[in-house]
Image (cartoon, rainbow, N blue to C red; front, side, top):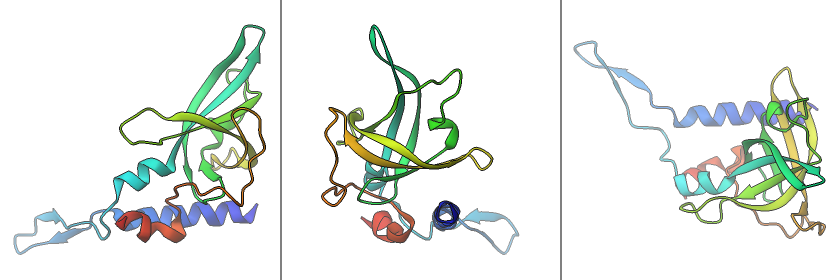
Length: 160
């Protein structure tokens, strides 16, 4: 559970690197300085996943709730908000489907199923692990090479 908080802290700290910093000029008017890191929006978009809580009904699978997450490791760890993936009376789920942005100019494609490794509703954070393909086949995490924008590779992700 401690690694969840470390991961969240790293994400918050690294995300602050890209915030513009205001500098004072002679006339005391603050103007934004250029960002410390130039963001590579293609990498960020590819590392952002679309998450769907899916419930099986007699008529077939139905998406009950949706949200987004961020791939933080090439082997399928996803950081998201707990409210996006925690089942509730209004968001019942039999599985969490992960859709990837294969091309940034096209809609995300449902590709994987993920399991919740840890969630904290108080901090509204959750960590998921991709475990299966959408067709039910088991994923070999050692062969996954997913696009990430994780904190430890942020500068690489930001620069391209």
